Image (cartoon, rainbow, N blue to C red; front, top):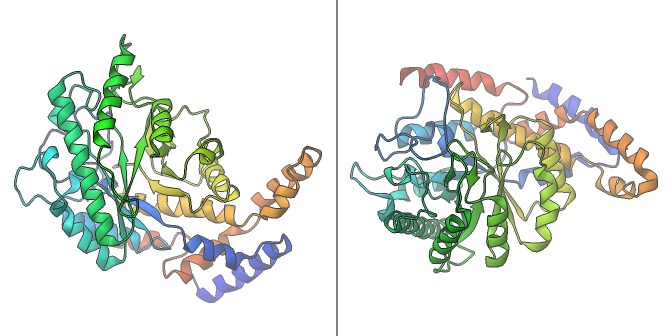
Length: 421
């Protein structure tokens, strides 16, 4: 795309937004300050580098598709992520799961992981100017095969997973110290029952006891921050999920932890966007895992759909950009995995740009009941505003391809690198 043509169409769009009282350059400056956390597990179909061979046992996860080019080791995964970052405008973060440590070919179980196993990731991120977030991995392991980890009735199993999460919090704090910025540590567990249980109370009491032991050690919020992620149901936990939204919300609010809201972990008729203003008055921060639920699968690639647009609009309208952390969380092996990263990240950023291009003061002025018609009319008119040229201008300013030109670079990388794996 000719940069001169992009500049010309941007100037026209800038003038149209100015007529609505919106400064597009200010919107782009605000967008540049937003960092998404890009999830490493899209690159290898949630395989990790432990070389166990158990698959996703007891995980409640399932990755479908057989596109060629899956990353087979840490070097390939980092190269693929670097290629994805090069096509996403802005400066972003890397989201790691514990199963992606570098263990030097030695058997290191989950309860024995150390910060040293992630030094390579730290050095790589430092070279690229990236920050790191972290996740405990309580799946794809023989001790998760029963479907219960931190809520297990078996004390040995429960202790194993408690020790694992303790290790992960220590690792996250170490990463935060090294990168001189907080590392977000997120906790999700697959625990639940496929069919109707009778002792829900017992499982949640066990989970509560585990969490209290896990969080006995306090780390500086300048080093790491804890979040807890719920789920409505999972594969193998259709009837009961121990770590439900209500359970974790109560725990997070009373223990001053961050609640993680995953767009694919609620009933399809629930609005995660609506939950933000209900939770933010009582908590300092929220972590979002942006995904796309389709029927029973919660982890499709993010697109610029109504849910993403509503979510982005609520973040901006609530003036919560500094209080809400945005991460991507999906895994699709049915097409190019790098393209999935790029498409999802750019879709989320487009949603945020559209929200930043709203005339916020005017919308608030029209929020009173007598002005409902005028408000709805303005919202409809905004849908027809030319945000595309503003997005293309942002991409050029950030040194990445505008529009869909990034596809050519993904295709070239597939021919040059992925097809040879």
